[in-house]
Length: 320
Image 1 (tube, rainbow, N blue to C red):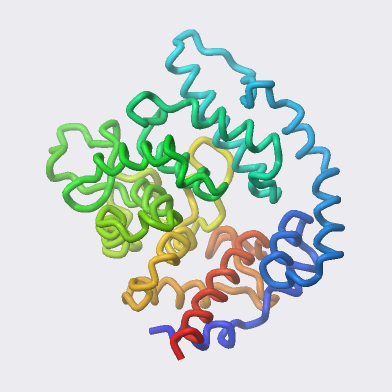
Image 2 (image 1 turned 90 degrees about the vertical axis):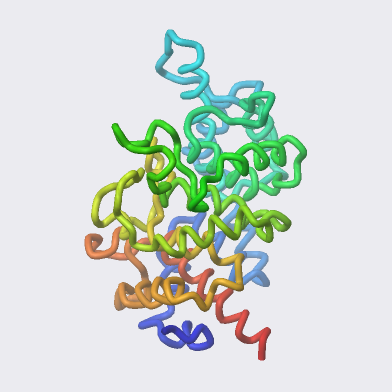
């Protein structure tokens, strides 16, 4: 079992120097803000570099006046078109978040207002439950978890929690499966619980606690029904921007989800996940995008891991 007080000392190498030396500007920027926040001149220099990034600017310029992005493909069924527009909104707002864009940027405000407008009157977002959970997670990361309309969506998804503490979209129930007894999807549940654990009030709710317990008990589970049925699904530490890729993250998302829930950090599966992360670190300090597959480290994954370890070590110091 890991001793969080010694996590940073157990690293093969500190990944931060490699991140600051070789990572893309947006990852360097976020690393400095987290670990070298006093280096304001360098932080501002990197921010200016990000602001002039042509890919980012093209994404912002392609936003409509109403805060949405136009799709290349048009769908004849209006409900389907709206759902795909919603998915595109999630993808692009995630990309901008990864550039370090935040609520103080006008284009982000417009994009988030447009995202919230996809809600139905009861608070439901389009598509399946993991899409709804991801929208709440994204809104929470942008600092809007307390917005009354966002709170309505939290209430809606709370009512969909199942008897085992997890969530499962009805379309994922296996043919001839019993909706009352089939197990919830760990990946759907993880995204939803991550939204709750990022909410300063709702992280203490019974809904969040039950969901978190389901995740803890399901660590490394590969049984169907599942968004990611492949046996190495837990090894995929880096989400991407295809339709399903946003919901990946494997063991890293598992830890990120449970990190705000300090009372669960001594659970054997949480500690097991920490130990496993330490075991897959490369000699240069970086961590892979896909464990046991990637031959070199990924800067974004490594920064996420470092932030987790920093917080775990800080908890021990606070308790001393």
